[in-house]
Image (cartoon, rainbow, N blue to C red):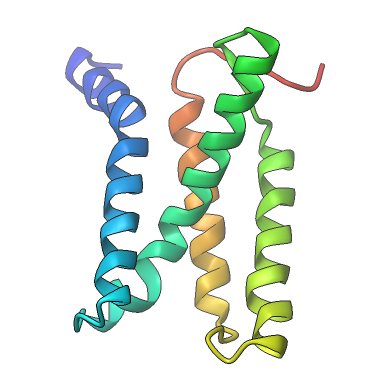
Length: 131
């Protein structure tokens, strides 16, 4: 692996969470104030950002509790958390709240975000929480 490519990947690992959190928060604020956003940004961006943010927070808490900064969430666990989010936000909530709609693209974006998280977080050697 070339030095430059490694630097890009390590910067991605270091900065994706604050960038994703800032972008997601900004989109929610603009939606709250009823600012007109392009459809893709309004309807789909936060669906991609959701799982990396949630999984990063879960991993942060696990690392803190276990006092081990190399700990990582296994892919299977990440996929299970994503399944729970998909069922809750794309099946259950649309039944009880008209603000939510069923959209298969949202589910694909949740899983894409999960795979992004897994790939970025496994750039360096990490330990799985499951032995």
